[in-house]
Length: 216
Image (cartoon, rainbow, N blue to C red; front, side, top):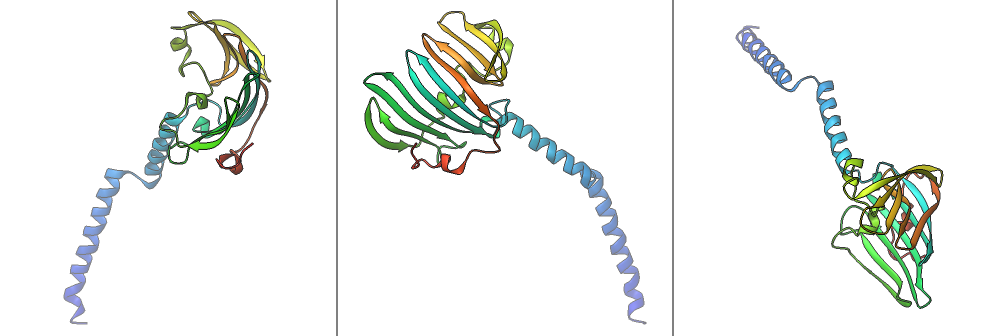
């Protein structure tokens, strides 16, 4: 007991000092709940900045008529950050293009795959240096109505594949389109008409669609 008595006050002093230090740290950083809220807010802000489309996910089938004929199927999730597009389009009797574009958010795992180009079999793929415009799902610049008004004028809304889309016509070119949540559900570009004929909600892009070796 005689040995322990001198040590006890020192132990109490250290305990009190550590407690005060912890209180000081907690006072600067806030409570654990406050810290959690701050982290969640920063994550939400980051996700918001990465959103390309207003719609979270979907599978859209488009039909081409007019100067071009054919079909296009689009899968997207993560608000357009990941996109897969399969196109089989006849531009003329001798010019058929069949290709797939895969965009997963980075160049290393993204592909432009050509199965038929200008009517000839290619069966090749490459990693794109930048994201191709076709995977943006809109021929219009992304932005709010104030930005669109600079180059386009509004032509009214209409229902396209069950979605109410807003119409825009170019002030200088033969282009008009109907947009829903950042996606051109229908457009007419100098006689090439592309229109969504179906829209389905999906949870995520099927894994086999993300395989560049899996042709269609």
